[in-house]
View 1 (cartoon, rainbow, N blue to C red):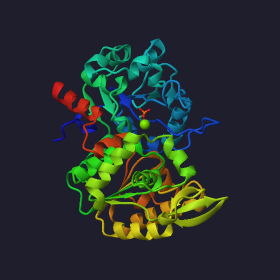
View 2 (view 1 turned 90 degrees about the horizontal axis):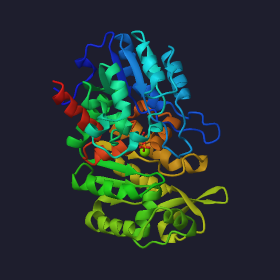
View 3 (view 1 turned 90 degrees about the vertical axis):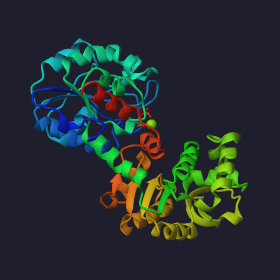
Length: 408
Ligand code: 3PG
Ligand code: MG
């Protein structure tokens, strides 16, 4: 028995279901077009099941944050869903006022509508408990029209926001199929990863990674950590290596003296378990050229790990039974600097090891390389996945558990 309900627990025919999904998409900065529909595709099993079981499905979702450039309405999200599903999805440009309420009241079994960006409601992101969120206008206006709340927004499961946790207090609630699959698969890995387990971090941010690594090693979820991308640069800097002005400039946008102090202590404590690159590929003009760590600093930007590091990391990964990939190894968008990411990711995908990939850029890299069918689990989560892997409780999951107890 799960600690939370799933779609198996509800009689859905002719019932109105509020379905919270994470359709927070990467958009083109100029055209605002959706660049990747992975998160929509992964929720299709839930939506198709609700349709087949003749529920009336009311979708709630967010895009961007108030004040950010990608904070837009969800019209084109509805169009994208519609074309993937092959049936009409009405977009209602309202969240909980009369227009939205009437649209819900007029629905037929098997129909789907999509309400507007829930983050247009100021109360969505207010710091409140689920019980307090349940008193909001959003929840109070919508819940009387619905029979069930289903949450399939795994990628937002680390947020305590109104539409994510408020309905669970007033409606019988369930995890959607994607949420179920993510939690089941990831729980197994945390509780009992096949050993040795190797976690690779890369990408263009590093400050959050430090505490994640510490927790993973402490909990023995990870046996070895491989660092590439900006995290590798930051760790080398913390070791006292001068990288050169270009890299220092990028690092200075994020790094504080405290960050480097934390990294130093982490390295002292777990020196033998953390693997750093021994060489890089730098961008001299537009060319790729290799440089050893011992030859640093350089006037050029470090855009990828070097060939010796690639071979070394492949050897370490060959011995693993569980591999977690979080972040590309370099600037994989540029062909000349795709090599590290391409060789490492392809090696993992082809080795048959149990592999998990998460985070928007990592998933994009896997897809660009055509490896998506060879990875054991591709998570839709970024922040939520990281929190989960660290062993932290996710507010959305806790809310679903509390709801099961309350409505049983
Ligand atoms: C995400 O994409 O990280 C989730 O949708 C949560 O969005 P947020 O980071 O803006 O809260
Ligand atoms: Mg985020």
